[in-house]
Length: 122
Image (cartoon, rainbow, N blue to C red; front, top):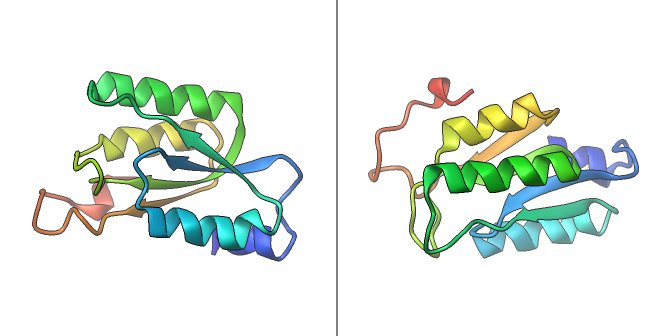
């Protein structure tokens, strides 16, 4: 739904989509093929690796949110390459606290790997 605001021209100039540096590449390619072609700026939160502490991840996400006018975020809960569980609840909270209108969580690697209650994410 949020992607269409870019595709249909309803997004404002300078609004951005946030993805993580560990995003599943097929998802990144889909975002770039649709939103990127429609003029959306796609910004990447470059997560620290291999030192991916919870605080380090949150610091990078918050810094990226403050640097750009992010309105939509596409976040991974458990990344595929490298495989790591990210602090999804806290990342979603940071997004909402920094003006992000809608957050999409890629939770496909979470099923069977982690206890996960969608209603608790925000």
